[in-house]
Image 1 (tube, rainbow, N blue to C red):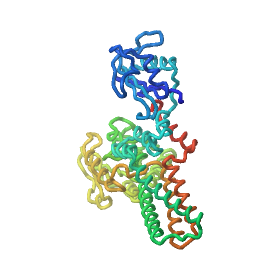
Image 2 (image 1 turned 180 degrees about the vertical axis):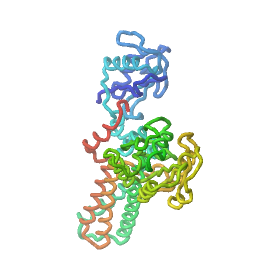
Image 3 (image 1 turned 90 degrees about the horizontal axis):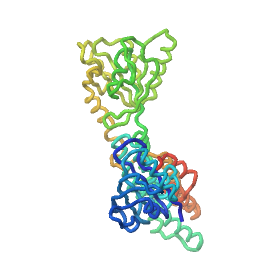
Image 4 (image 1 turned 30 degrees about the vertical axis):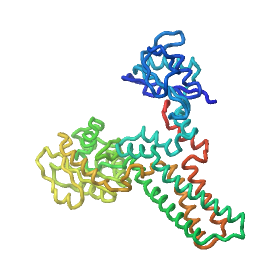
Length: 456
């Protein structure tokens, strides 16, 4: 028997629709007690997954809302338990009153992520799929959403489960060998196991290598905008964001500290830092800002160097070029295309593979910058959605499993005793068990589901 939980599954803002969700042994009974179908038929008598029109009423019988209700019976539900939902008008006041009514009828407030946690504990999904739920909710780009959706469908689970099952088979065989020491490992079996371990190690290595790409997909590319004062760095940031985030004035040195914002450019999530103008100065505060600008450029994976196209190149521009050289990727943005051009464009092209001419003021040329960023990140890492690992927990477990499989393979090849192979194979099984949630650790699951919102 499990207690019945209830929560508002949509945001507490004024909207067209608001959803209340219940799960547990008494979910259908409680839902039926607070709902009057216009058909006159009790809600609990309806078949699963059918929308029923009627009234949601308080304990005293007062109508709280005219809405739709639906019930679903275990085990074929999201949580694996009996569930019910009310699709109400999206008034926070109405939803709060309806939730209180559900509590009065016997439900309790669901904890963050408790619906998905129950789905995991009831075997409706494994731990990688549960993590994919919150990754899908948190996705900030289309690529991240597609990757998370494929994880939710089981793209990682299916690949890892095959390896897990193969290691179980190998462990079972070596257990038999240890129990019956007089029996030798059959040559064809050894060759078969060696091939299985090789393939398994290769598959896991691919997933490990995808993690760096996954980190970028999830967290964004650390990027820095650099350039001399008044080149238009802050204006470019504002133009890309679509609102006035950074203060812009004709006075050199207006930006004295770094400003960081997230934005999507070319389908890539950028953590973009606007920096102080690079120049020599005796102002103590501005000097710190310049030092931070150079540090941001050193740490960035992408540097966008901004130049004033209406003026000739200066020594400070050359410092900006030098600052961009150390980055893995860099783009030269020649700003102020709305003014007569004096800059030596060929010299800029000699220092940068990618050059874009824009006017941050008129917001022209930004489409070209979007295309440059898109092309710059195309083809990096696995392109198929679902093949990219984004979770540090998953990457760590996969790395441990990979190391154990490699050790087992080496032990098998050099003819170590069966117990040496068995020890490493079982270590790999344990690591993959943690990955999938077959071996449940409460601290790990608590940490995972604490990221969830209430109602999911």
